[in-house]
Image 1 (tube, rainbow, N blue to C red):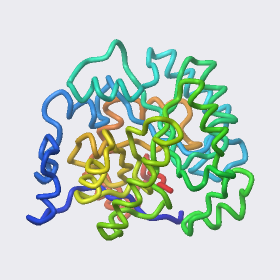
Image 2: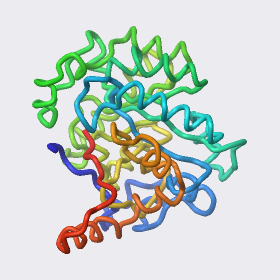
Image 3: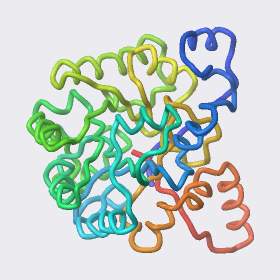
Length: 313
């Protein structure tokens, strides 16, 4: 698959970068450190009490690994309800950050890129099951429901033009009226760690400001491609976000409110595979830095590999 792999660990930080974290608690620049105690356990996407799941599109004829067919999505929601889970909100994130235990297990159903089908297809199914999403959008795409066509998606956009498009502002408002929450996916879907300080700040600040102007608030951001770094996390904090989400492919040790790891969900996640990703043990395995070298060793030995990770677009 095409795409850029997600950043997975916090690199060593220079003194200059570390100073950018002044005023953020806990100190994000401490390599390998994150939220203390219960908050770190709950935000780390390894707990049976809180799961952070990442979707993109819900469409029957969508591109593999980005789209989940509607019937599969409905079975996933049915499994969540049957197992006693409810959907999570920004208010729940604040409770988890405080180390509080929630009334029952909470699944944060996040959607990246703001696909039009999030409002047209996913939302009606979610409402049937009493659940609400957190959807991360690109404000520049919302005026007319623009094509989702950055370079990494060009081939998929060519093959699936009807699916590979953004919702418009009417779709966003439909989501909000139904109780969904809207977050930022930056402005242009570039890999944030590759940008200079000014461009990085503009990507995050401009997107948040546009959403605030239209909707009244914007508390969270999902980094494009899931890419992040200490400088990106600092910029998210400095531009006013309360939470930020990653999408690690090779494990993530450090966890804090500006680097909350998620597990990607795609068309293969039906039945037992979905329940595995929902389990605390399954997510601990998927987020372990030991998984990628184990996979490589298994391939070299000619063994089958039980779990493959989709790249994030």
